[in-house]
Image (tube, rainbow, N blue to C red):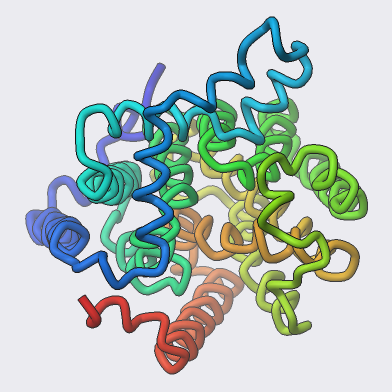
Length: 351
């Protein structure tokens, strides 16, 4: 089993300035994650309660063979987010709940940083992570289950070249990654037949979106008590256009010439991520019209999966690549400015 870095050393490894900038960004992110005053964060009490209640082991009752059918146990592995419960229990036994929260924040940000370290230039992915509205400010500091699941998925995918395994584990940390899991499987089964994989993924994504309400009612687990199936997080048609725009780098990666110097292992792994990305986009765009809750709940992956895709697309020397890269930079700047005006980035200064 070979990781991207073990096949071909990343060119930035020979550039001390690149190493220094990457290390500086990682240090700033981790230092901020440790030093921020979390008492004012709205999600803090919820996560403290997670780590406190997990140690009671009440969540294990659903896995007891005598009380549950095999089918319900399998469903609960995902809907009950069992690996998150295991993590919360282990940390809850070792640390006080507030400390366990800080450890989780540091772990997820370090996992993500070392995941993108495998890419040819890991500085840009970290900058995207810091500036994305749903990146460090939200899934890196507030919505920790989503952030932890993303970091684990990217770490296993990029370091071990196992996107299916990474997405499966992420699914048992946060349920919304179940949306991306079948897309990862299709990408693996189709191999280099990328057009076939894309067509199957889009068809499946639209079908799942159409059945989304029924699937949520059947397998939503404890979320049925929290979310209204008719709740809408994506309220503008601009959401759909933005999602489609975010799919352009993945389409470019799949159907344009391979990036010079990129190994076959890296190309295959990143193609799988691109297919998952396009599947999530198709699901979210279709859900906007037939299952709005699905569009909002899985929609954060639309921009987060740009972290490994956008910096590794071949944009220099190709007209299409340059146009797509420029459009995405403008779009991400627009999102950053819009989010700044809305106050989401206040978390960077309120602590």
